[in-house]
Image 1: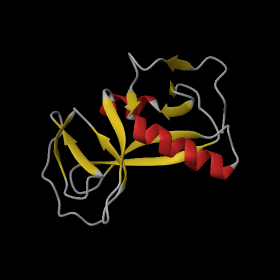
Image 2 (image 1 turned 90 degrees about the vertical axis):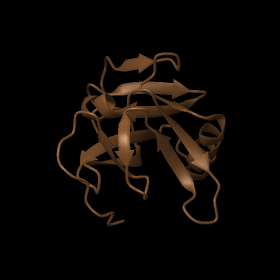
Image 3 (image 1 turned 60 degrees about the horizontal axis):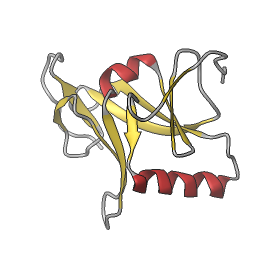
Image 4 (image 1 turned 60 degrees about the vertical axis):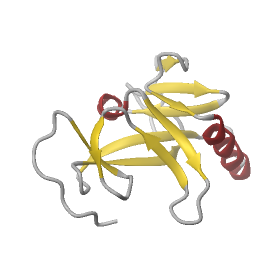
Length: 134
């Protein structure tokens, strides 16, 4: 992965995404278990899914050129420019649940979402939602 020598690092007040205390705590725990303090959480959006777009999260070795970089209490989150348009103002939480627990993204830009919680549609999207296939 290419590391941007001039990344857009933002504080939590104007961040593209924010983390709840519970999500930050869980991410620190996961990163510590990996023994890789350099890992960042990459949040991304891809076309498709049952409502038009799908969320994704993965660990990355660092930032790529143009990424927004959010440092939240020692946890780095990176978001590419295209995805940032769709998730700006979102909050990542960690939900403990018997079924369907894990990281969840609360997106104020989504006007509708699928029952799976991983697919969404924004006000500017056209077309019809498809059945959830997750």
